[in-house]
Image (cartoon, rainbow, N blue to C red; front, top):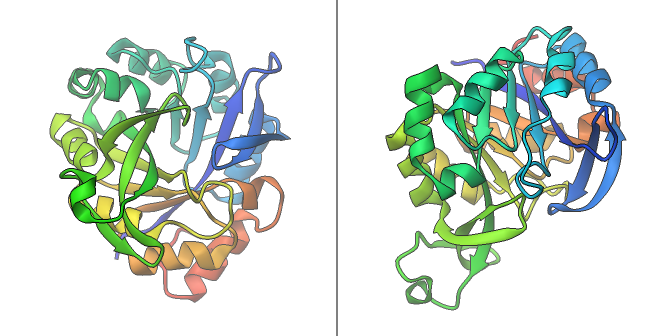
Length: 274
């Protein structure tokens, strides 16, 4: 059995020069959660398997990723670091890897210019090319209304999943399952999948979305959006075959520290690194 990864996520912006970690609900209601360097160091020391740093306003503000923040984090953190936000061209992957990151996640730029995935995978290797998919449910009265999209029957009704860009501020009408398949063909090595409907709600992962994406591709999938307690992480590992679970609120606000989460998962049959 492959070891499952636990990944704290630092959603950051540059409202202050040194950067700040924030957390919202469904990509809104943003509140302060801490200092990125301090939190990253804490999670490393607690035994996190990786850390994801997402510059959530870089694309919307049309600026580069917070390179200096990444450099400060990687001075003292020696586990894989994934950086996202403001990655617009293949050369940006190289820049972030030189700053200390191990891989880069792109969402908006990949949808705007899918060839960036092929170019980046040739330049830095597919293992360093992560695609962020921020998906939202779109409910329809009948499958025909979805106009050829992948449709799912859920407890809440019939729906398909719509990809968003610019930190959730704009929707594309692109089917998330089809997009994930295309990303793999273009050279992506991993998918960071976030349910916008569950983000920050603490209602658990969107299992239908997560399972559908994971079954559509052969590359690793990271589940994100909705963790309220360790049982939510146990559920996503038991009900889907994702490689990793990403969480933010439960870690940032000291509700369930990383060691406690890993201990719970191990006691319930999940193979994690202790």
